[in-house]
Length: 569
Image 1 (cartoon, rainbow, N blue to C red):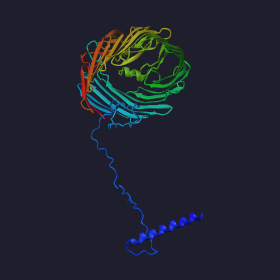
Image 2 (image 1 turned 180 degrees about the horizontal axis):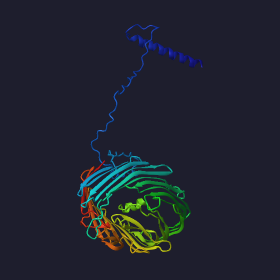
Image 3 (image 1 turned 180 degrees about the vertical axis):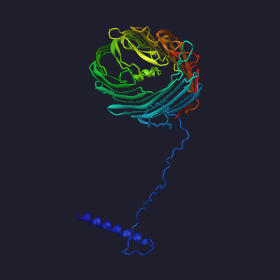
């Protein structure tokens, strides 16, 4: 131990002496003293603080090229696991332009017969769960006959709100229609029997609101429901008018393979200016329609009843059966269907004057009872290019309404009814529909009605043709040019015409059955989109310039053409 200690001390002393010798061999800049020591360290670079960017970035988009977004140009990038993992390059999606898909438009046109058309429509569709908008329209014409004038206005505001559980829809608006009693019946000596040709105008203020449950794809057995309210105030230029408030709704619950539900409705209706002792009529209706539906893969069966109560100035209670079957012989291509039903249709001043605006004062208005309606037919599709439906039916009707010329003022029409109780009018008919899509450019459609009435009291079903045919076609010539065509054919009908004596201008007590000739009306129109916003349109009616009339003494306009511009925004 001592030897090791001695060697350690000797070694340390030798090193110190060597260091001192080396130090004395250098020439220091200043004397080194025992109380002054300079310590030298390695160089350590120190970076200065970073300078902040003191300007805001330019957020404006200066790209001039704005192509349409097309995900079909994005290639499929696959990971090659045979050569090992590698970084996938991200393809930048081209900057896309936001396209305006709104259907807002304004239209203006003029034509012969002093035709003036103005129309506008707008809707806010920027939100998935809210949609609202409005529309306005004006159309006026003046024919060649004296006081052959027509004027129509439509204004409305609508809205829709989709909530998690249900959807709300609403509409409030005004419809106006003006014309004159321009029909001129003649006496035996060709004396006109309508010298004044009074004006007539109908004003219709209406509203509609509906609450409907939303379908839940995760719960097909959930209760579905709907509640709807409708109302209107309808008046003519004179003393006649009608007020109505109707509430309707339904409930439906699916249980396994069948549905149980009911339709309910109450229509409170009052009419004034009619042929009653006090000039007013209350003909309200309430009905309930309980049902059960069985649904299978290839069939649907509905069994139920329609319970109807008429109340107001008179009351009546009826129960009608309701049953229907729909069976697929070849699913999606060929179905057979049939059923039986019945019900009550409200006699409405508003509905009658929309069909024939030349009704006179003090009308006789009553409800129509469909005692029995048995029907059956076939329907189906052939893919998305061909669809058809053919239905035959047999009805027994009590109180079938008919338009007849008044005996004292033949330029006015009145209402009479045929069929009462067990002595009902028998109505046999055939209906057919067809829709054909020949290509993306051509679409065709048509509807055929054939009717035959076995009357009880009256000789004919006055002013009701036995055959009606309507057809339409649309040709999409290009993305900018569209052509539409319509054809309408009405077969012969009959009118109840009274003759007026030459001497005193009084009508004869008897009438004669007058034929209202059949007619064919061909119309066509075209629209060309000159730009994305601007379009040009033209519409021609009664191209064959046929002189025809739907109601006795009231001929329609001849060939008329309308053209103008359509601006979308």
